[in-house]
Length: 271
Image (tube, rainbow, N blue to C red; front, side, top):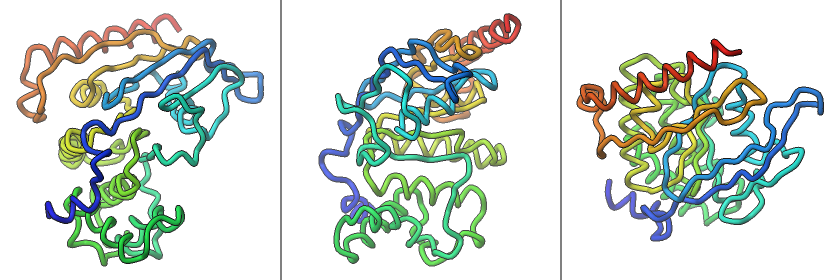
């Protein structure tokens, strides 16, 4: 397994491989009539795990779509390592709430699809990289299965492998585990931290779950009701590596969770 992973991990993608992003003075409104952000500013340092929290309608997914380049800002600038963002940037990777796997492709072909579309590497090398990505998420034995033969948690692992095989420096994640049962979700949270610790990507992770945000993140960014933008930020100073059971028992975990819940309650009450 480790030998396969070495195929995937180039020297530039291990630990120091995260990208910095900057959101500078961004205004955005749908159809020019419904403002979501005004003069929004947000940065992340390379390798930082940022969780994005906020009540429904605050613009979490809109911010992710702006960062991905799927939506252009009305004004201001969004950059990744100094370059204006575009959806085709090789430094970007995506993982969404739905795995969005192709049902007619097996697991291996789903994972190497992005490599093929990008025209990267000969076919044999694409297969090796896809198998290495599956090994990272513990699914190399499922390479020949089809999505309908997998559990929901396994499908999300395939989606994560599909994102990781492209060696993104910034991973954008929109509630990727929200539809899973509690046990599977906890397992994938720990798996995500293990992978991030090994690969070093910068991560922006959207969630509605306060405890999930505290467990995963280096920093939690809390959005207010649109178009308020960022309400506040909270540094998560819990020790790493983290295991869910042990971390949730920490008094500091409870304090951080309660702080965020109080802030969210204040935002909702003032709306």
